[in-house]
Image (cartoon, rainbow over all chains, first blue to last red; front, top):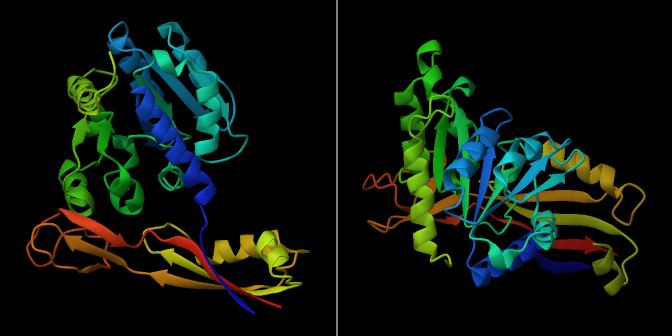
Length: 220
Length: 100
C-alpha cells in the first residue's frame, strides 16, 4: 500500500518557530540569532553590544551552549537577563528551547533579544528559532573561504560580521577573496568588518541594530 | 511513521520516499546510517530509504530568468543580478511511504 504524506521533516520545529515569531511580533520585540564557529567572538560581540545599548534598549540574551554557563557568567555584569540553555551535546538550538526560555523572560518589558547559538556553522542554519534575523559571525583566522564551505548559512543570514580584522596582517586571509565568495553566494548581504579587540567597525554594527529596531517598529 | 502505520493498519513499512532540496547540507550516507539505526526493531526495520533530490532553482527579480544553480554561484547568468528568489532547493519532507 502506498500512502502519500507530504510531511515536512522539520515541521515540529517550524510550527513552534512560527509561534515564537508571532509572539515576538505581538510584543514588539526584535530577535537576532547569532551563529558562528566556536571561538569566532560571539560572546565578545555580545559583551560589547550589551555595554553599548545599556540604558538605551531593554535587552535579554538567550545563551546556547553544549555545556557550562561560562558565557552566561561573562554576561552577568551587564545587568541584562541571561537565560542559559545547555543542549547536552546537541549542536544547535531549536524553536522549542527558545519557547521555554521565553517563559523565564518578562516579554512585556523587552525590545531586543539576542540569541547566541551553539558554535557551529552547519546545523544552526537549518533550524528556524522564530528570529527576525540570523547573523553569521566569521573571524579572520578561520580563513576567507568560509562562505563557500557553508553556503546555507550565508544565504540565510541578514548580515555577515567579520571579526578579528586586526589579525589580517598576520594571516593569509584575503579580503578580496572573502568578498568575492560572498558576492557569488549572496550579493546583497551587508558585510560588517569589526574587531572586538580594537573596537574598529563596531559603530556600523550598532547602527545596523538601530536600523532593524526602527524598521520593525519596536515599542518604546 | 508509527502513527501513519497505525492509522492504515500497516505491520511493516518497506519504503520511505524523501524529498530533499540541494540547499540542505545533508550527507546521504549519514542519513541512511542514522535511519537504519533509529528504525532497528521497529515497523520500519530494513525499510528502503529513497531520496529524491530537488535542484536549486531561482527566479531573477530583475530579468525574470529562471536558472538552476549548480556551482554555488547565486548570480543570474543572463543579466548578472544577484537579486534572486529561491523557488526550489530548500525542500525537506516525506513524500510517501509504502507498507503492508
